[in-house]
Length: 364
Image (cartoon, rainbow, N blue to C red; front, top):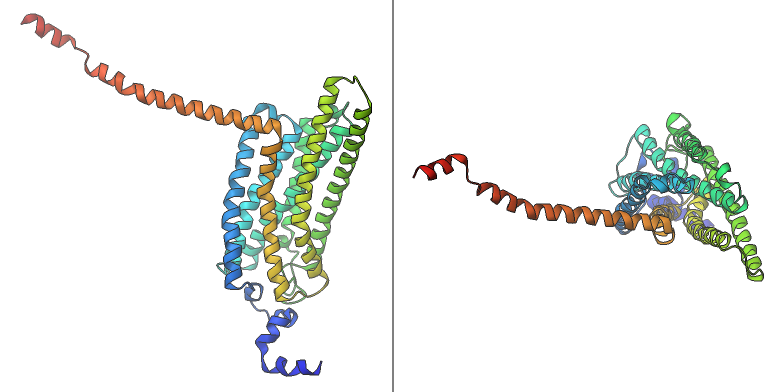
């Protein structure tokens, strides 16, 4: 312990690398939050430049298919999927732009501009988790209340639940911009992960996300238990109604699909939430700050994976997508055939003999 005093006094930069508490105590600008090395900036920049546009295009495709297909946009399940896709579109825009702007281009915004960008990122990811909760509850009602499902969850109630979800998340996400920010600016007890963010607010938001994840896990656990018990009963029964079996098999498949989405969601979010909890309770080192920057890109990757799961496993959405592609191909063929036929019509018009020319020919 005594040998640590000599290098601490002779090499202040070494203290900055080993103890972020002393580094942050003298933090006067955002440079103390920009801890990535050049190599790490290149790696994270490559991830964002690749995953951001891919996430945007995939989720826009899901939104277009749902909004242009009447049978899909009338069903509450696909309204929730559309809400998830919309949240992931916002995530691809807000997260990619603000993350690259901060860590790669080292843009130091003022408190208002920075908190507005951070609020957009928080809004997108909070709505993504909230939409998955609504999807889990939708699957729960579909299996446990199959007889009264259409009565319990109407399109109007689904839209109302989405309105409540987005309203709550907008308020929660922009609370720091409204005034709930760190009273000391950039110095402790502010967060070591986010400038101007109060640790109490970060603890509340992290707890809120953990509650949503716990509810999702509980809903899917009940769904999978019901699916398992139903499969066991089906194997022992003979001559059951084919329509009822087909409907239950469809619900079981969807439950398994959304359970896979849940596993991906938890795997992507647990590292990020763990770092946030550590940030609330203690002071992070620069190595932990750099590790958090890498883990936060997992949330963007999760937004890129979600629409792939829908396209591959949701039969109705897949068929609607194929139908839309077929219509686009037919439109393209019609335009091509029209453009091929138009020169011929033009040549016929040019070769038409006028009345004046006929009169001259008769006079000669």
